[in-house]
Image (cartoon, rainbow, N blue to C red; front, side):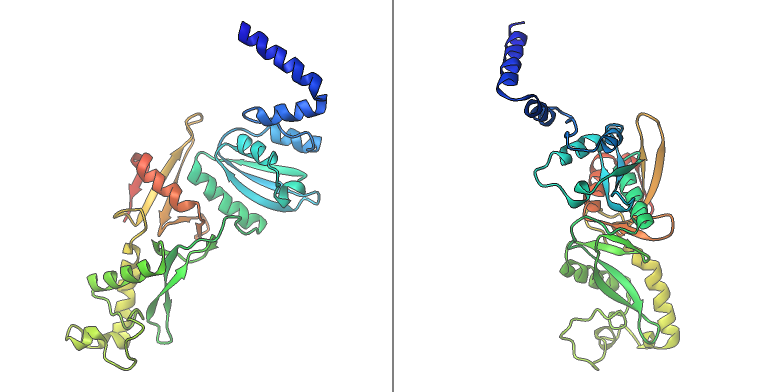
Length: 299
C-alpha cells in the first residue's frame, strides 16, 4: 500500500505543478498502448479508437475523400497511436480526415491486401526502393528469349520475377550456373561476358558442345520452351532449395485462414500480377524459420 500511496502523492503533486492539459498530454504519451493525441478531430479519433490491435491494412483519406497513404500493420491501433505521437508527422497524417481498415489474418495476408488496395486507389508503395535484382526473359528481334537482370522495385508488375538476388553480380553468377547446368545457349540468352568479342563463335559451340542449331527457327523455339520450363528454378535469396511455395496463414482467434502463392521472392495477386516490396524478403525468411509447417513446396 505504501507504493500505491507514494504513486498517488506523486500524481497529485505533478497535477499541481502542471496544468490539466499538459498532464493529460503527458499521460497519453506514457500509456501503452498510447491514447490518441488531443489535437485529432473528434470524428477521426472515434474511428481510430475503434481499430483492433491486430493485423490489417489502414487507408488514410483527406478532407476531400482522396486516399493519401496505405499502410500495413501487425498491431494496427498501437502502431498508429505511436505514429500519431511522433515529433515529425507524415503529410498524410496532418491531412487526415477519415480512415478505412481492412482486417487480415497474418503478416503476408496484410501485404497481399495492401497490394490490391494500392491498385484500387492507384497509389505507389511507401517503402524505400530496394537493391534486389531478379531475372526477366524478353524476346529479341528473332523471337529468342534473352535474360535481363532488372531491379525488383517495390510495387506490382504484370510479369513474374524469376529468382531473387541481393545484387546484380549474384544474379549474373546464378544465370551462368543455371544455363550451364541445363545446357542452355549463353549466346542466345545474351549472358556472355561483356568482354567477349562480337562475331566470335559461342564458347559452347567453339568447344564442340553445340552445333549452332540454337540460332535456327526450330532451335529458337526449342530453347524458348526449355527456358520457360526451367526459369522457375533460378535461386531465391534465403529460400534454400525452394523456388515456388504456398504459405498458409491462420487467425488464431477466428480460425479463418488463407493460402498465398509466392515465387521468385514475390507475392502472387488474384489478377495474375506480382507484388514485391522491401519488407517481403524478411517476412518470408521468418516464415521459413518460424512457421515452416505452414509452407508447401511447389518447385
